[in-house]
Length: 245
Image 1 (cartoon, rainbow, N blue to C red):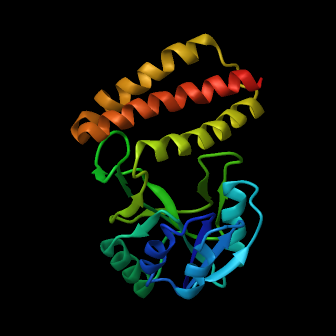
Image 2 (image 1 turned 45 degrees about the vertical axis):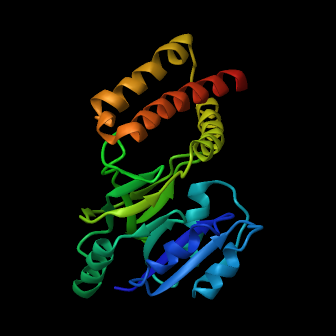
């Protein structure tokens, strides 16, 4: 079992080294960059990755393109702000030694937000398929929230993929602005009707679910921030879609 790790990038000089250095279990690393103006590609090349330039259309298409550039059929897909934990790396080494018995594997993601590891708030375990056989799986999702669809058996690894999210509320707001625009475009393309109920009722319900039902209060002040931001995300998504229509 040989594995190609793939990462798509755009101005990720802050994160890319950490991600690449965690991929010792990969037989090759392919970085697909969409025109970075910082040192992302320089750092990636120095750390042994094969860098391919490709214009960005959407996340799923870019990740499928990255998989197509790989020399091996088994793909380990990471985002630039993620890295393998030592325990997850050990699990993948064990899988390589013994051979796969599934066509794809989910991993739990553990997120760090404002410097704190988030164990509640609906953020953990946040399982995603990240290791898959490209002959039986591909990325789907035209706008946002892309995911791997596996045509076959899906297994589950136990150890965490580490996700280093926002270091500040300002960074979170900038990221939210970009993603709510994509989410709104998706709603418009699907011809979803955005009534006042969505704008008025959905944000407070999202806050309640995140902070109370999903026990965000156990994540301290960071959990409170996550709940407020989740509510704001939904308001902005629906408001932007309404004004786009």
